[in-house]
Length: 300
Figure (cartoon, rainbow, N blue to C red):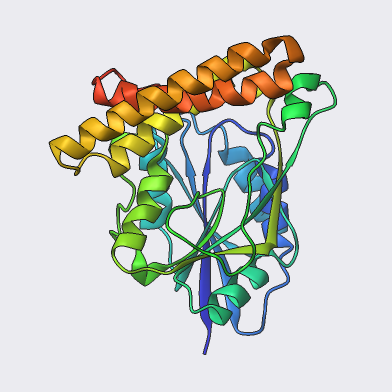
């Protein structure tokens, strides 16, 4: 019996896309597994079209390419899903490079652990000119628990999803998170709440290099704040008024304590102090949610 796998890939003005596509084309697939591509270009000008056409000329893989002009990452993700044909969908970013056994390892893990979702490992590389304080803190590191660990949320940067478990077969990603980010967390949380089994797989590896415009304090602070905001949006909305009050108080206290530690550790360097500032900002994001403050927009 043939297993159909479709890679869902969103892109936006990234020349690295060709490397991502080539790494997908080089996959060493198990027998009876077919692979196709569903690409959504979130640039209204279609800047990724030339790269996709270049790839088509050198590959026999079936590729569906569509421009999604609205600047909204959830719209783009929904477009890839709408055009996908497969028993399994694989999500990956357009600046990542996959190891040759990536998809094989994802499928193997899904079968071994009877999973509906498998979250692979992302290895982060830093450019040579990365500030030392970022290298010391390793602020872009993405932790993957030991293979087979059951989790409740995930990210679309490296994920295998059973098509039958999608929250919605046409539009599973909530448009409300399309500018702020956090839509993938919401997506996987919905799968978990509906009974889907999500596990991790350290052997399914992709890698990415941090982009220059993210190697700064402002981006990291905005990202940490956004993580707190979206966490609160997803997990606190349905709480009782009393439970919300308790979470608001807890976040405020944790933000204050983390901020104090960040201040006290400042003389000892950014490696230690900035980690606490990130914790402070994340909790401050939760406080901002309760105060109905306009959310931070990562994808604007």
